Image (cartoon, rainbow, N blue to C red; front, side, top):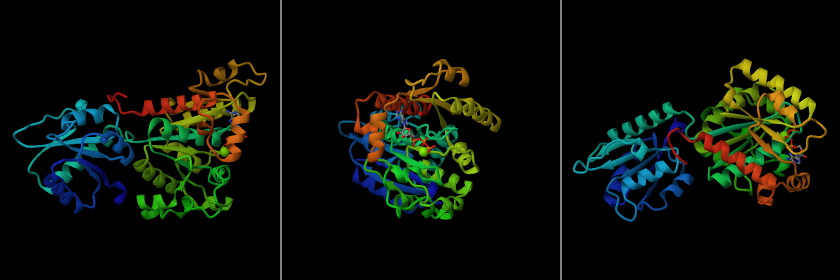
Length: 381
Ligand SMILES: Nc1ncnc2c1ncn2[C@@H]1O[C@H](COP(=O)(O)OP(=O)(O)OP(=O)(O)O)[C@@H](O)[C@H]1O
Ligand SMILES: [Mg+2]
C-alpha cells in the first residue's frame, strides 16, 4: 500500500488554508505530504528534488509569482506531476492542462473530496502515460567487456548532473556485481537482497542504497556469486516498480547473458541501450540478439544502439556496424583509454573527472537525448 502513496507538494501562502490542507491529508495513508511552500519562487527547483506526483497550487497565491502563472511555469518546466489548482467560488478557474491546470477544486471542500480528486488525477496521469514520471534504461551488450559498466555508471551521473533528474544506478549484473569492484564498495555494504521484497517501502530503499560520492544512489548486487540465485524475476519487477516511483531515472548495468533475471530487467526497461563495438564477434552477437528481442515482442523503438569506441574501427570497415544493425547507431562514444582506465581505477566517473573531454560530451549528449525523448507528450522542454 505505501508504495502507491501519492506524493503531494502544496504551494499555499495563507496559513489557515495550509493548516486545513495539512489536516485533511494527514489522516489519509494514501497521501504523503512532502512540503507546503509559501512562495511561488523556486518551486520548480524544489519540485525536481521532491518528485511529487501532484502539486496543489492556490490560484490566489500572492507574491512575485501568482498561482496560475506558477501552474503554467511548472507545466513548461516538464515536471512529471499533475497540477491541481484550488480556488474560491468567486474566482472560477477552468481546467487547462496545457497551462498546468489538470484539475480544479473550489473551496470549501472535504477531505473525501480532496483525496478522491488527487487519486483520480494521478490515475488519469498514469493511464495517459504510465512511465511519464520516470525513465528506465537497461545497458546491455551481447558480449563481455565492451563497456557496459563504465557507460552505465557515467550515464547515470550524466543524467543526474546534466538533466537535474534524480538518478539511481542498479547493478543488474547480479552474479558478479561489477559496480562493487568499480566503486570500491566495502563487502558488507547492503544489496538488493537486504530489501524486504514482500512488503518493501521507500524507507527500506533509502537504507539499502549506496550513496556514491558522485551524487547518485546505487542499488548494489549481492556480495557473493551464489547469492544471485536468491533474487527472482518477481523480486526484480517489484524493486524496479518501487525505484521508478522514487527516482526520475533508473539506469541498470546488465550482464551479457540473456537469463530470466536479465530479461526481467529488460522487460521493465523503457529503453535498452545495446552496446556495439568494432569487433566481429560483438557484431554477430548483436544481430542474433536483435532477432531475439523481436521474437520476444519488444517494439523496435525500445532498442537503441550505442557504438562504443566509435573512432577505433580496428581495421574493420567503419560501415560494418551500420550494415549489421540496419541503421545508424543512435549514440556513439569515442575511445579514450587513458582517461577511462584512470577514472575506473580510481572509481570515479570520467564525466566528472574530465568535464571537457570529448567522451564526456558524448555521454552528456546521450543523457540529454534519453531524457528529452521521455518528456510527456505536449510538454515542452
Ligand atoms: N570508450 C572507451 N574508451 C576507452 N576504454 C573503454 C571505453 N569503454 C570501455 N573501456 C574499457 O573497456 C574495459 C571494459 O569495460 P567495462 O568493464 O565497462 O565493460 P563491461 O561490458 O561492463 O564488461 P563485463 O562484460 O565484464 O561486465 C574497461 O577496461 C574500460 O576501461
Ligand atoms: Mg560489467
